[in-house]
Each structure stands twice: as structure tokens, then as C-alpha cells.
Length: 328
Image 1 (cartoon, rainbow, N blue to C red):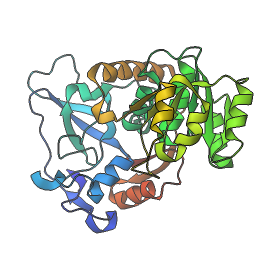
Image 2: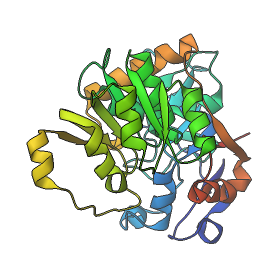
Image 3: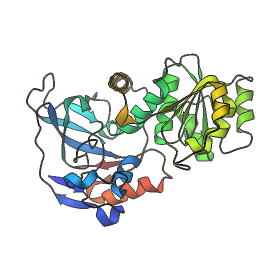
Image 4: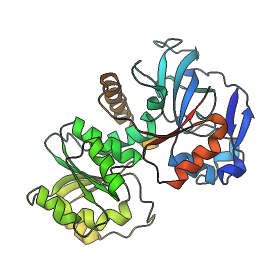
């Protein structure tokens, strides 16, 4: 099969190889999927750069955890699945060497999720890390119907879905955007109010909108840098669900202030989601895909042979939407 892989860490142009690779065969409980779209996420590029030094101990890695395609073979013991079934895939390269950046991938049957005909393969390749992370951030601490949520960085891949999930479940959503284009994307996702950030006026704009009532929860995309302003608008006993702190990876926290606010800090990582949370996310994603409820953004698509460009696009970080590798 055609695939992209690496057997050393480093920049994409130096380590990614494209060519013929041994086609995998499904083990017990697995399905074999013909991949048509592979989603590239920051966790994939970080792994390639060496974030997990032990990753290559068991050999070369085919990157990317998210993807979509069609089931072409069933492993022993797999029931209630169909050859030809359209699926989207999550966590393909978590705990194993071979991800979705190839014509074929084998994954446990429950990680290949039925996909309705109205959903494109490109859309399916966004449902793993972006959509599931956002779902966990919004839903982990109970129903949000009637609540007010702040989504920082609402124009990002996760933030954009977080706005849509929160609106879908009945919340009022305030989002932040760093420039005019980001603000427009937040509005497109359905935010009720979008404020510029960073901005000295941010706190006052939010409290003016809520008539002085502080927000119930925050979905945060850059914990360390956003924390001071987030604490100014979060209610006592509120929740911050955060999935990244890229600007400051070792943030200092005002412990006493946060303790007296009785707040909950929830760290979210799709790879570590509890099984019941995963199953609920899969059910809800199936509903919104079938209903055509959400907007799904593709920033760029690249053919498999241009995977270096796809990885570079993610690392640039100035795109709006997902970066997808299409596989013929």
C-alpha cells in the first residue's frame, strides 16, 4: 500500500517518507479500513518532533490518529459490521504504530464509527480530536442548557466545535477571537457574543452582555495566558475545561484566589477520555452528522505525497479549520 511514515524524529521535510509499505491485516476485534481522508492535528506533528521519545522503540510510525474511509475486512470475532460500511476513525495511532496516513489502517472495531452518507470523508476525518475534544469540554460537567459558556479561541479547530456543541445543547455562548477574521469565524459557528482577546475591554464587554452575571463554565484553548481574565468572569463554583496551554506550558496559578472561588479545573485529552464519555460523544456526533447540524471547516487539503506540506501547515498555526490528507 502507499503510506507515509517516519523512523526518526525531526522536521517533516527531513523525516517523512512516502512510498510502498506493508499492508496491515486485521487482528481479532479489528476492522481493516480503506482510508480516503486523514486528519492532521497538532498532536501528530508533536509526536513526529519527539514529544514521546519512546514512540519509535517498536519501529517506524505511520502518523495521524483521525481519518475516514470504508471497511474492507473484518477481524476474527467482529460482529454487526459490514464490508463497504463508511466510517470515521479516532485514536488510530494511539498505542500503536500505524495511523491513518496510508491507504489502509486496522483499528479496533469500536474506533471505526459508522458515518452517514451525507457526511463527506473530509468531515469524517475531523470528528476525532477536534470534535470529540470539544464535546468532552462542553459536556463533562453536566448539562449546559440554560447556562452561559465562554469559549476562548473560538476560531480554532476545537473551539469552533465547542461553540457549536454548546449551542446545540442549549447554552448561551460567548467566544473570544484574536483578530477580525477569528471573530467572524466565531460568529459563523453561532456564538451569541464575540469579544476581542487579548483586550483590556474583554471582561467589561462580557459582564455588560450578561448584565453582571458571571459565566458558568469556560472552554479554554490556552490555559496559562488566559487564566487571569478567565478568573475575572467565571462564577464561584464554575468550571474551566482546558485542552491546551501552548503559550505557557508551566503556568503559575493563583491558588488562594482559585480555592476561594471553589472552581474546578478539568484537563481534557481525547486519548484519556473515559469510555462512557467516548460513547456519548460518538452517539452525539452520529446525530449531528446525520442531521447536518454542524459546520465543518477544511483549511487545506493535500494529496498523500504532499504530507510534508500538510504537517507544515498545521505547525504554522494560522489556518482556520482542519488540514486533511486525501488518499486515492
